[in-house]
Image (cartoon, rainbow, N blue to C red; front, side, top):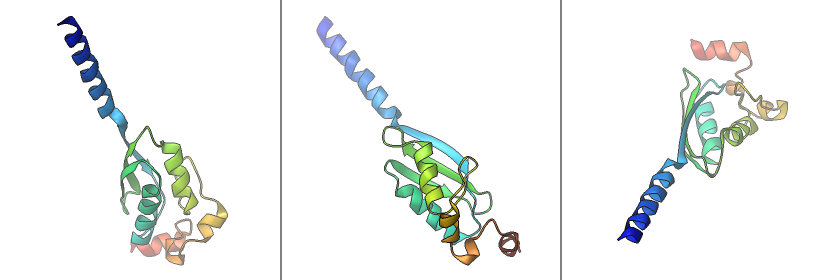
Length: 117
């Protein structure tokens, strides 16, 4: 009976720890339009372990759910920067930024103003 209780305790502990794999995070990502939204979210989903990625055009907030055993925020930020979008911690390279569609040039104040109208 004692062994059965120990085995059940170990199994319950294992199941409890296995359920804590998903992490939630929120970060700011620069962009201006729905094309940016699509590109940012696609870059996130291209990162192994990302389960949910929703970027808000107005607030620039990227909400994530990811498997912490498979990826981390740094890797996700690198994926976003690789497609041309800045985060607070990581800036996209000039080459990646220049590859964006002209309406997505969020560093250009004229483009940003056009999207705000």
